[in-house]
Image (cartoon, rainbow, N blue to C red; front, side, top):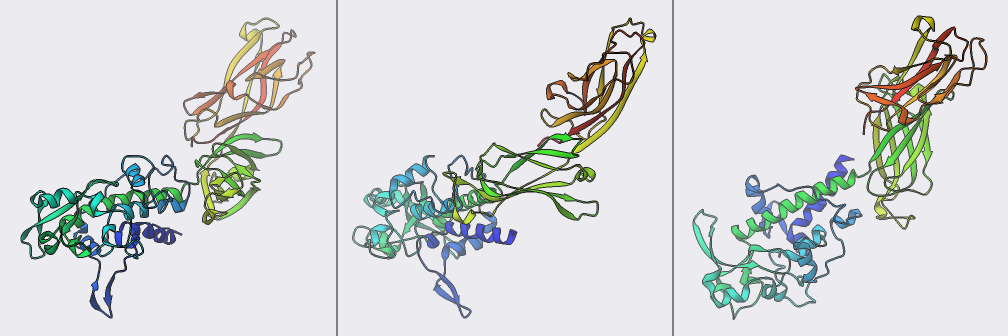
Length: 458
């Protein structure tokens, strides 16, 4: 999987080589011999890779409106119109990487559009020498374009450069006049009058294109791993001996079809499927689906939720990108932390100095969890509780005792409201109240069994 992902990223990075996006063939060797069609762009990169700039931030493809894999290459925004290049350069609609490179840079032979007929395979509308660069300013005063460069023998030379000043991003050294182009700039027209075979030009190209490649590549990696779910254990049924999960789609895109599965790793590291459900229709971003699984799975606390289906949907029925249909993956590990504790407090009224009909209040606490519980990620279930005579836990009352006989009907399987559960450090706690019904003998609670459930914060 990672090799395939690396190959896809490589194909995206390839679009930052202008020759690749301008249909310009290049060939380095034939039967071991160097050809005249090798790429000077790639030669410069290979010779200077240690000194090039690779820094950039991850492309925030979501906020830029990218919705599918293809758009990292081609968003179908640029069709030769310089305005699309200007919008991209000024922070407007971001282009795909192939569009960006094609519209802003030239190849070695497939150069400025001015040099070709529109029917020629080497013709592209942009960049144009006459309108995208400062050509007319330079030819009217050639010294204005002079800058120094380093020859292959290490000596310094001087050349006359064209700067890209419009139709997209600015590039200080976009091309250099050849000798004959500089000698007769107004007379000679053609691909041989300008060149990119120059250290200043190649440096300026790669200074833009490599950081761009880094940003789009890292954005593409983020796109591949965009499937995100947040898992929250929201309930435990002691009578059915099963947990209930809330699985939220937090990917930023809708899910469609496919399956949700829960796997468990046992103590030996073997993984098995313990629950599965099909997704019918769509699960919108920020919406949740409920799943149950048996409490026997809690023995190792090594559980994994996996969604496999379509991530990114249009009109609720179609994958945004056909290549992504039915193969999207979102996974999240989680660990149910379950405690069952028993509490007893049963004393005589006289020992407390209380009169018949009195009430007492206390707090029942869980043991420490290995994390601090967070709001909404816990539950307290009263499995059974006996009161003398009446009482409640977290506002959940036991059946009313109407006589002095013992034992009274217990509270069974009562889920305490979340609002009545408090977080104290790494513990959970609930209030408990017992009330004497006037018999005047004893007060308190016996065999109170509470199951405390908490999950680590996402």
